[in-house]
View (cartoon, rainbow, N blue to C red):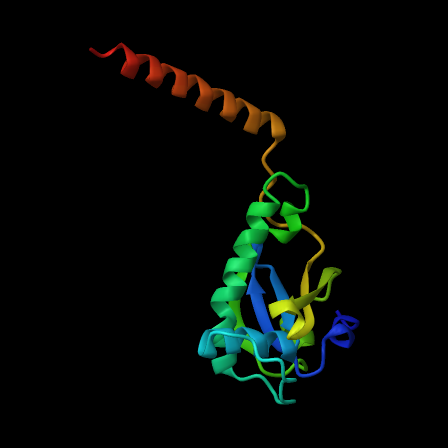
Length: 171
């Protein structure tokens, strides 16, 4: 936890995430990514100019919260068959944190898995980092097993064939 604050980009927008079993995580978005997302929403495009060095506001957080929600939901879908779903799945946006200092009090002091992504918006007009820190010990649901999915696929195929036979047999 103490090392986590050293990894945060300067002037990052900090989103506290809630997950399974009352787990808390963190998403930190660099000013360039935050600025680009807000520009798209307000002006319909990403400007090529560098963002102003400023502290993110609650309004900024409110504007990008739906994007964070969609990204976390997409992560759940992408991990549906992966073992990483146990620790990375089920997290959602909870609140905005305007200062990183309370992180030591807010987050539990246990190991975190940290994922960083270099994000490029509009062909490189804006580029920056997004950091995702989630508790290393998984509290989420287990992934679907491939066998279960195969069984489901067979059931769907059987149902499809049955319904086709019935429909095609109707005069």
